[in-house]
Length: 270
Image (cartoon, rainbow, N blue to C red; front, side, top):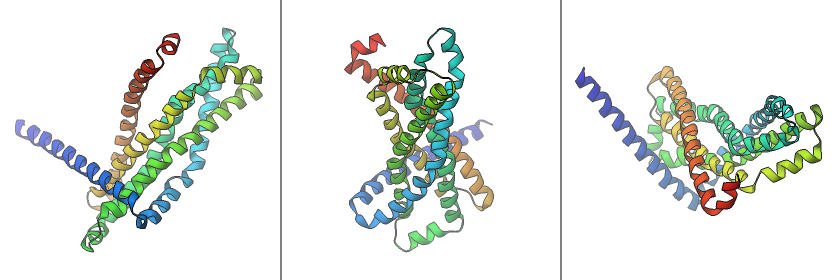
């Protein structure tokens, strides 16, 4: 019993070390890919698949997040006579937390699963081994373009989610609930800073990088057969989702500390 436990612990430590080497190799190869123009077509192709084709689902997600917040929060604020402040609650929630996190989760499901399935199928059918046998680095050819595309486009997709969330909240608040539009936007402009928007966009770089690395790693190391590919896709999504939540918490703490350092008076007032 003790020997089995020690063996499992050693196996997990080995997996962590293997993942760390994969991250380092992907980072180095990605930096080299940026300096070489021959990898640009691969990056453009992944940007189309990962970014452009994800825009509709991200926009729908953002819109319904904003509309749901408006419906849920209206009664509480209206009971206190503060319904005109609804825009502050909706917009700051969307741009700082719900927009980035939910957009990243949607991408982890749509893009992360596709990356894992694609690379896992190539692993099972020995296409990755064939690429390596021809003298081509499979990480440079398969992983780096996908990671770079996720790093570059996840923040852009978060902007789309934020924009549609703001529009959705405005539509329900002003058009459906008949809140004064001028007061709605005035309070929103006063309550939401550029710092809040920037924090959400910066999160996108970390969310996109984590999702891409985890998905590619699981695809590269999946077990044999269709069951192994399916299990790798499930593991990639679950681990990506947990990583997004952990990264979000860590960055909230960091951003709050930075804000209190650079704008101490405003943080005390807030």
